[in-house]
Image (cartoon, rainbow, N blue to C red):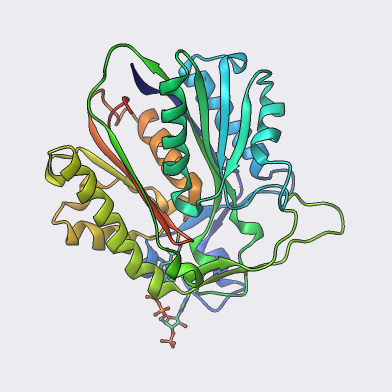
Length: 326
Ligand code: COA
């Protein structure tokens, strides 16, 4: 029995903050941000949105695209580094209640920007052993509530949003697919969040900006990590990166993706890019990009795809699939 992606969905909050907007309160410019990152604007959640509400909206869209009812979902995994509550309840439980998925398990997974790939692998394994069962895998983040808006070296990178996929059984054996999950805790100090508080705004209560980033170190790690997982996956499946149709790399910085393309001697066109208007949405970036590509008709059955992410931890991970088979 094989497993496939049955549908995708995403949600980006309507408020858009451009580089020019940022330059009004920060010593920066559209020219600097664009030339160093490939980002022009990002979506920022309004006070009535938080990670669970955006996750639920993306999940609802994924259920509709899959033609699956909430009652059919047996598992919800939310990959996030910005859960509504500092520890519990999990954001996934809030999403379960919002969607009305009455009979299912739900939990959060924290592997930073690589979290969606980690969560997708857990859902794939779960769906394989639970015949006929369907899972919702969601990446959702409200990074705007943890970045330090006074730090021009980091705040310009991030945006808010959510992406989701529904995973379930496919007919027959399905084509070969593979996932690799990696971590390197020696780089834990390169990007971290110190302290923390509830992210769902309450009257009179403000989260503390606490994201700390060593940009150069993360940049160098990211290029090595994305190239490594993509090469490993191709090697494992007896193919080459040149034979891939599309790479959905974590949308952190366009210059990182360009450096990966150069390192792997691949044309940049193989890499899906949407960070110009989303910024880095962490665990949400890969499912948002996948949903956008599907809605544009850019995902065709049988396309050879790699999803690859990296982030705090340090974590990195990749999945090779032949769309939509996992
Ligand atoms: N606007 C204007 N100037 C800025 C700036 C901004 N937003 N941010 C930094 N600068 C300045 C610095 O102060 C520095 O000035 P100086 O030379 O006078 O000291 C100069 O630009 C170069 O800074 P540097 O940090 O070397 O820039 P960079 O080319 O490495 O770009 C990042 C910084 C953060 C864009 C880049 O390192 C990066 O994207 N790293 C990866 C981060 C990432 O992906 N994190 C998420 C992981 S999931």
